[in-house]
Image 1: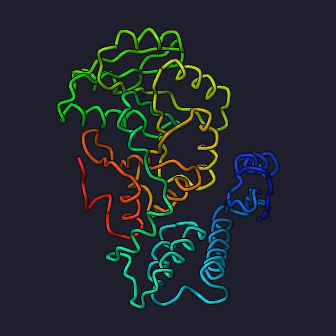
Image 2 (image 1 turned 30 degrees about the horizontal axis):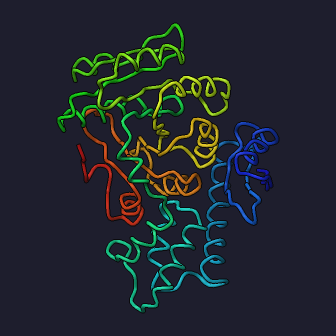
Image 3 (image 1 turned 60 degrees about the vertical axis):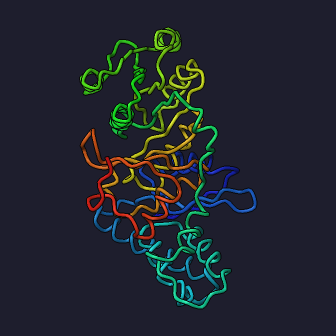
Length: 345
């Protein structure tokens, strides 16, 4: 296994070099920015059998994480006893070492002597929340048109249906759905059936002109939810075509939808590719398929985008929770379990 350190002006540019030099199967182990320079550490397989490569990578990551935590939390010694439980918990969740170090430094500044319990300490919750971007409440309150963008099978349509169902239960009757599709295709899967069941108007558009015409006919809708096709992060041409179609929707708030179980490199590369669509928030789905929720916080902090919602399971009616910094912090500290202990409809 070859390890490479790539330096570039930005993280997306460094990830592009990784793809070119190490190939599409390269694994990104670490990203950070120091003094205006992005640094990415990546690994490429040298023909080892998958089992051996995975074992070696896990060992290297464990050693790297331990060394970084030791350095970032106070030099050559581990985290102090009073914050060690917090550090251990966040490390187990996969929070990046630099964020763990920031949390521990915040806790140390409190100057108290008691041991900090990650499940109950208000200061621990506040310290984790501090590394996560929050919402612009004024912008969120004024929004009425929301698009859900992201890679294939991310859960965009499922997220849209869950939101439409919730709005209908809340008495928001003027809800409409606009499905942007590739020319020659129809709105996919269960969306037409679900729209009829919820008694929600559904219009289909291919391209900017059809989108504008559809929106004119939905002028009385209180909330418009926009479904979009999914494209892999390498499909720059298709993503740019989607950008042009979304540009026809005035006042649109795009949300980037991502499966929570994807590894850090894929999440970062996808977020970088979809940055052209100017997403305003993140939605993570398939939370039940990962045991390490730290990547949710890592990507939120790296992109500056707040986490708007978390989804899990297969049900269209339930298994969905509005998020934000407090909810994500509670997940990382073990104060909230999704799923199966908590079901939010």
